[in-house]
Image 1 (tube, each protein chain N blue to C red):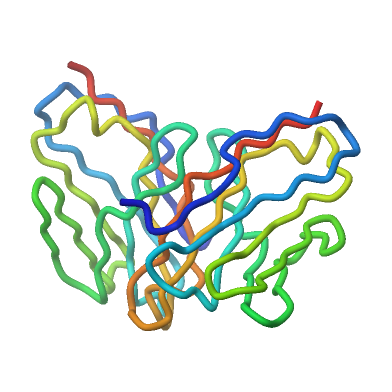
Image 2: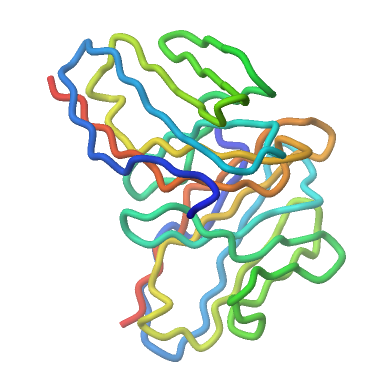
Amino acid sequence: QKEVEQDPGPLSVPEGAIVSLNCTYSNSAFQYFMWYRQYSRKGPELLMYTYSSGNKEDGRFTAQVDKSSKYISLFIRDSQPSDSATYLCAMSERNAGNMLTFGGGTRLMVKP
Amino acid sequence: GAVVSQHPSRVICKSGTSVKIECRSLDFQATTMFWYRQFPKQSLMLMATSNEGSKATYEQGVEKDKFLINHASLTLSTLTVTSAHPEDSSFYICSARDPNTNQPQHFGDGTRLSIL
């Protein structure tokens, strides 16, 4: 079993839909949780990061962490074709900048 | 703007060639940089952690003599793929962390390496 599990998709939604992306993990020592967006042939771009449990909102993006269930989510409201990309969750233990454990990534396609 | 710059973005070369990839932190001094490898439709796989002024720490299964890492300054780490072969063809990505903050790593835009 992988340390971080993420549905690879692809996930196809119409423009304007609410998108829910999720990861589960097994290591209870993870404290920092990140979401990265990666366009084809580009490096990952940090979207959101949270510490411990709770919600964090930034524009159309909301990150949720439920440490009791070892489950994190990223919600995208009013999705746009430009949101089409691969979304990677990542986690670390003692420091947000330390060694990251990545999920496999979910490919999202937003159709006009 | 980008805080981590990676160069070159694309390399095509013959088998047996050695290829050097540079990773620079632009807005901060990075005592630690990371090198990843990514195959198509797969996630990032950590190859090694590059430490300024000391030897890199390699992940299990990564050949130290094949993938040479040098972190000679606080803003530059290099990865050299020595005597590259077609199986080394991949997408190589570096990242860096600012030691003065608790912020996540920033990633470069990657280098697509194709060995003919």
